[in-house]
Image 1 (tube, helix red, strand yellow):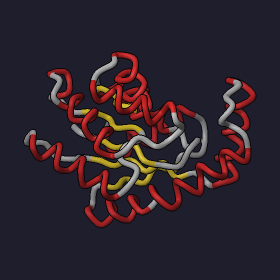
Image 2 (cartoon, one colour):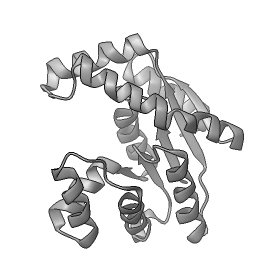
Image 3 (cartoon, rainbow, N blue to C red):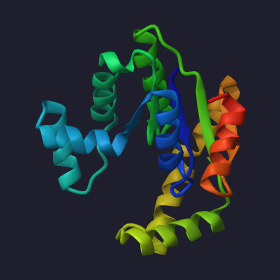
Image 4 (cartoon, rainbow, N blue to C red):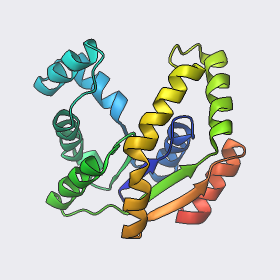
Length: 187
């Protein structure tokens, strides 16, 4: 089973992804984690990624797609993966399709965590207070939300047209949202 977790920053993808990975036994693949791990290992792709990250630039699609391809080649992913934070654009979504198809796999579900903007800001500010994350401030959040709306939100229509998008109302407690996921996709 191959699943993409989609939604704006602060929607709960990471939290729900961790819970879903535990319930299903699927490997959770976070783009940020992949980039940091590859950079730390010093692989060729990791060195390329690190050079962009050190300059504060976005890592190009070919590097991220290459890292995902390495993950999908691992034996522990033959049963599927949960992709968190990737794809972010339609071009990346098409690359994911090609990677899966090359392995005889398909994308089963795209879980779209829908949360109103005011709730997202409240969550981000709460996370900033609890975790002290410097990127969790109102201005940085607004910039991330604009980038999400421009680049990633078109994926909602893309996957809805394909028939594998599942809308998840992601407001409420963590267990309530997890129960909605389980009710919608049986996991």
